[in-house]
Image 1 (tube, rainbow, N blue to C red):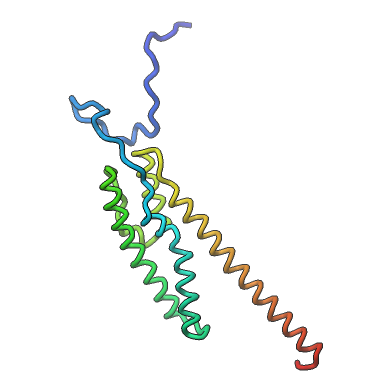
Image 2 (image 1 turned 135 degrees about the horizontal axis):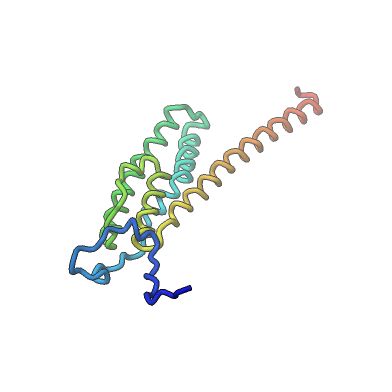
Length: 170
């Protein structure tokens, strides 16, 4: 078995996705991007939690009378704020020398925006999926919390009904 005299090429992840450098330009001339995590991307990741808090505040302001228009208002507010935060995020990433920012329009679907943004940042810097995974964790907490709250409310209603029947009020 013959051994090759050539040394193996340096392994660079996702090399096929990186645009080739023009002739005569060394690869080391392009500065490495900065950190991809921004405050605006983390606020987009926390959007479900903030939306739930907004709905709770609206429900408290209307004495617990939550209607579909109130929920639609909360969703529209969340979408507009996510879009605005994505614009800020795009500007911050450009300042940190990221060349392929994700379109802010995708922030209307925060999970799509954060995973696309994370993938593009990862291809350029090797980091950047933190806000996307934080969004998944927040979604799981919100969904679990809403379900747990529903179960607790139903259990308390059953308990008060049972106690009212025992005392003779029911």
